Image (cartoon, rainbow, N blue to C red):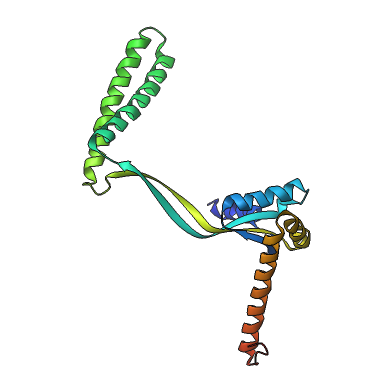
Length: 195
């Protein structure tokens, strides 16, 4: 029996809101976090708030060129750590005599194994990825949502935090409502009084 449906239901209960409505959209997570922090500081029920990132993209920052020497050095260092771990495990079960010799020998074997393994892995790529990088998935926009029963109080607090942003958000919402109403009228075959 799979527990995946149970986990999905649990996540949906924890991540879902009843009739979520927008309090604002932000260009960075930091701005959205600042808004939620302001709500929390003003005793707003933040347990009914969530930040939703939209328009996801992956950003990869190239850190440098990857060479055989760097790969082997990284393998040696990783192997040494594995050797330390294995040496400590042996020391726990075999006692303390000859600890230094045991640690040095497991570190040396780990270093050799790590270097060879890293070199083989690097050579198997055929030079297709000769650089190091870090990557992260980020959103283009972040929207702060709350349950419908708190939206009016939340919007009033957002107005106090940043009056200009609140006015822009109100304008954006009004434009979206007008656009939706216009589309509904066109679907019904009516004419649009505002052209």
